[in-house]
Length: 217
Image 1 (cartoon, rainbow, N blue to C red):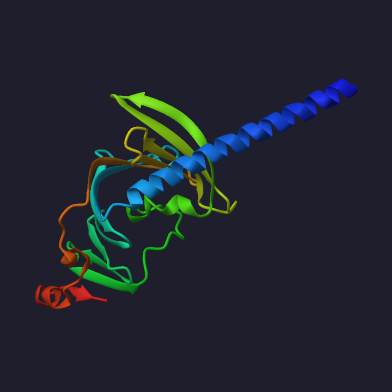
Image 2 (cartoon, rainbow, N blue to C red; image 1 turned 30 degrees about the horizontal axis):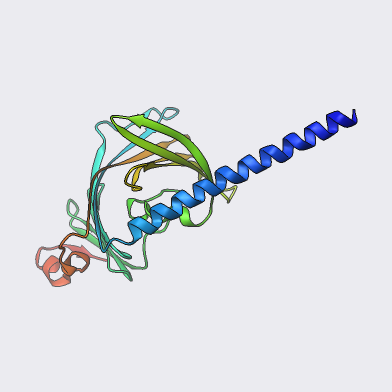
């Protein structure tokens, strides 16, 4: 009986060490990705997104395409029919179909449990536990997944799988699983760094849109 107790204790300790090791490896990989991608002066990223909720019978097909240019905290995002322009302090959302513009102080909030494309490179830095996931090898691309689980047990997000290109150490895919059963996937289809871009890309010309008859809130 005593030997059984020692065996169980040893097994528990071994599993704990394994869990710590995989968590440490995941952290080191995420830190490497953050350091590499954070060193770029700017990034232009093309992506697709899909949403599947089998319980609700929802599947968007074909995938939704988007594009984002990031430079530090600034970004210009085209997604879901809107243009999001953030200059580091103020967010402007331009809806061309409705000819409406919303201006708010600060950046997009994540209180609705959705990881916006502008947060793809930073969302995982706070509020998550992580461990190494699967290594997939498809179409000559090796993708190492890191599995993230929210520290907040009341989060609308149950799990996030972050796919990292093992060669470039760039984020390639993000899979988000919500408490409502929805699975949202972002896949990066184009990536360019350190491009020649205009600073006007992150500014808002109010007079221009007023002349075009936009309603500005």
